[in-house]
Length: 502
Image 1 (spheres, rainbow, N blue to C red):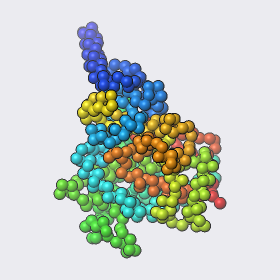
Image 2: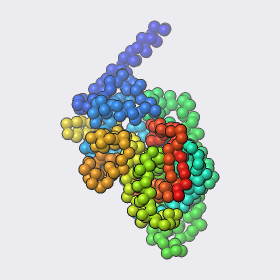
Image 3: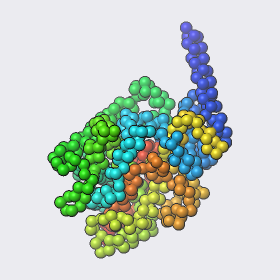
Image 4: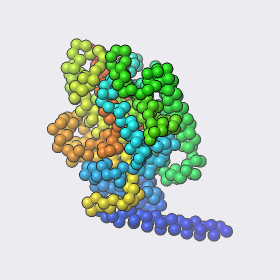
């Protein structure tokens, strides 16, 4: 009996290995010039990957094998791209507009919202949501950025004089307040209530999703069901979904109280003669697609998507910026001069859109921060049929990894890539580079719909911090340790030191 079981297991392993090699040959035959680490049968290259070293390991692959590098995650064939011309082809080609296979691990959380959907559903949702991020609408969000930033300043003042404190949670709660009041149309006062359950649940979910992508046994729902991560995910999903449903219900009640809002009017004027703000959630609650209103599930999946993307990505960018600026006093001085030129003798007056548009050097520092630490450091696209580009053939099912984390550190594109040099983003320097050499907000039809919103928000919050505080390195010295998740983060926080600015 034992001998029979052993032989059965051996032949099963042999059969699966043969199937794997045939699969590997099929994928690789049109990409003979693309190199990569030697894979093991069945498991591929997963033994080289974990969430602590993932980005750096893929970096090393590119350094060794070139700007295109191939790897296997189990039976899945992945080609990592860090070449602008190939990235332009992928980002602008409708045959590679589908998100990659691993995005299915987000479905329990985000279902098929704007981030994860494809084809007609994506086109219709994108068309529906785009008006909420028109520049004229964004202008009306600036007072919210400013008001919410003032609360953050009060919280930061409580930490002045400390040799070291972690700014991470304060920033996350601030951006959570902003996305709620602007996109969702409600005030939750997360900074004042300091309830971090939602923020912590998001962090855990992003880590679990990344883990599932690189742990073979977690690819299978049946096996994943018996893991600890499954139970943790269920608990976090309950927190996140209940939060989103409460946001939807609160806004629904607000609209019911206001009879004018019950009929969506983009030209409505408030009592001060200003055009009323249009919340992203209002569009979902009052719009139809193909003559039918959106279901509660339709609304929740988009709210979950925007709450996640609009809060966590911006918090990441602000936090890394503070970490970098604390270590570059000469750059901080240039930033202060710009703030003084804009605000003159009244540094604490409310910020206007014109102020933000004049923060040119601030924008350079933000872009340079996102070069080094792109909020979304990697994106996957799925080849939905065989695709040829130049002398390469990407077979149907190939997972194309768009990898800004390495692309932004290519020394031939960005000399001295590890150095923080905001002047890289002066107009004359940008014009020298390929348009697809910088993908902090992705590119093509599936670029980030909220990138203008995020830039204005970060400028407003960071300018306010600069006008209130001097930013210094923590003592003892602190270096961020990158955690490879959907949204890039530091697993040991962002520790800085603040002093009142005179």
